[in-house]
Image: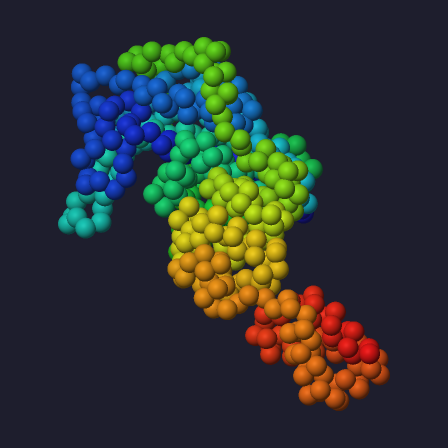
Length: 478
Ligand code: ADP
Ligand code: MG
């Protein structure tokens, strides 16, 4: 029997506000426990939440970026449950009337074609605190610094058909929220995480199978591995005559498996109801249009423009537009040189990315500025150095030896384009290798590479390769 995988993701994105969603406490990460929790976050009686209007702005930006409807009226609701890290006894979220509905985005499927993934909704909510078990003797601690941190929960339609598509979708959302500047997307710090709903059904069957929900995946790699494990588990279970039960599961990355956490029967009934402490959120059509007007160029549009305007290869355009700093770096470099934009792209995607990875740096902290890289590429373009020597110059620039021109000057790397100088070396090489010359003249054309290599060796790579070829061929056939 052949199976089809069905996946829907719920992504929790922490919004990059300075203060919390309903209080003035700071959202900065990493502070001493409970130093950033005010009376509202602690759930004291008598306090009242006040909505941070920045989160409405951010949610609207997101909604418009995924072609969704931004609701002019949305309502906060109480989701009731008991947990030590939730002192109020309820989480403020949105339920029946979320701020964003009916969106979509496009990912590349296995064949590289555009595939639409529907976005059911995105709603605003507050994060809970967290329990701390490590380093405490026979007791647990509660840290409420995270309580009240604003989250945007983005829920997809069950349109995803493989672990790879799930990762592509999640990456796309990650790119969009960072482009918009509404989240830092830091996955180690938990600012961007997802729950994956996974089911399988026999190919051709209309009805969905029963799903399991894998909670709290905080890396793209874990999303892929957890889904793949879960799919295998469900298929094996059904083929052995068993049944998938609807439940919440946890992914254990050490063992690379998912484990049952709680079944649907034990699940909470949240008794949602509108929060009487908060007014409905009402925004005008003009407000929504003003948000649309200030949206930055988004990843898809930028990628298409890079292909159209700079004539880049599509895959390079995709890599360069996967983050705004990378795209900005490329554009700044391309603007500062006459070298072909594709050459600029090759260097940014190739040597520069390699050096950044090696040193664990972000492109914004690159040791070679966009303008300095452009300076190097200009020297390839005007034949001062070859592409091969340029790699050496690049490394020296990376190590702080100055601009391309500084390095070329200090190391004497200027390309030899003086014809008579090259001819001199060519003559010497021909004289020293009579055997190869005879073979070449007898028709072994491939030996031209051997002669070019010798000339390059003698000039330490500095002879202009085009001229070397030309002069060699002329002299050898003479
Ligand atoms: P809940 O209210 O239990 O969270 P929802 O209906 O809101 O359930 O769905 C949550 C997520 O699960 C959505 O992303 C949705 O696309 C996905 N989903 C729903 N049914 C299935 C299914 N049978 N298989 C896989 N994913 C599913
Ligand atoms: Mg859910």
